[in-house]
Length: 316
Image (cartoon, rainbow, N blue to C red; front, side, top):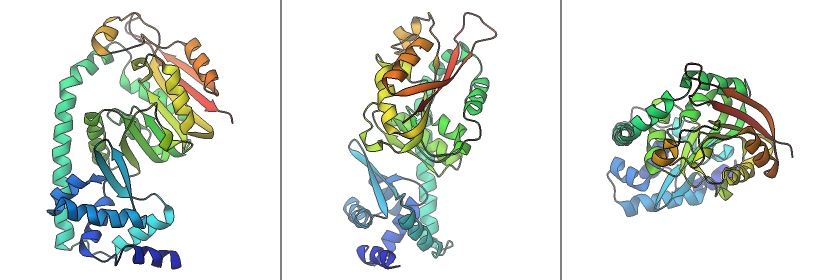
């Protein structure tokens, strides 16, 4: 109780209306200062001042994304429980709170439209590559089967793209973080999390070979159709291993070796597939063990792409 009282003191009276409105919005979605100024109709300095008090109190966390930063409710169980308990006492029919939530919904819809516009511009490329391998439905069924009914405390999806793995594996994690270097992609991924009512996953802008801030936090790392974009995929495995806790697992999905040179010329693929021998070698150097591997060939076209699934384990 003393600790909770300290939170109230640190907030300089948590009942201040703007701070309550901020907490109410951040409990629904991670948002930037720009987002919050648009929704609340207040100035950037005023919003930033209130956010600083909330961050200093430890109730809100700040995640930098280049020149931008996103804010959300902290993950600390005691503090987050305090926030959500506080928000339960808000009148859900309060007109100001309802107006803020309508503003949030409108903002999310605009962001979704912008992200979908970007994705539609590259969709033809995605459709072409999909046409070369077995159906996504079958691949995704095999991914789910590879993990079974395991429930992971924290999953990190490296190169999350549209956030599809966060959707597909939502039954397998309690919390998750998706990381991608493309601002357009993370906007799309955030929109899809909202559409699918996934509140226990967050999206971060970041470099998946520079993961110091995520060291030793995950029980499961996902690397889905990412390795072929790197000259040295072994470096990705080394970086990914650092986010794993002892006994953690890594699930990798990629193409088997192939001869579709146009994927390198037109689609920035640095590797024309990944072999079993390469995975074994990279895994060994990263201190990981390959505990499962599976090939999913294109049954309709023998010359098409084969999708491979590997599960690796950190045996520390």
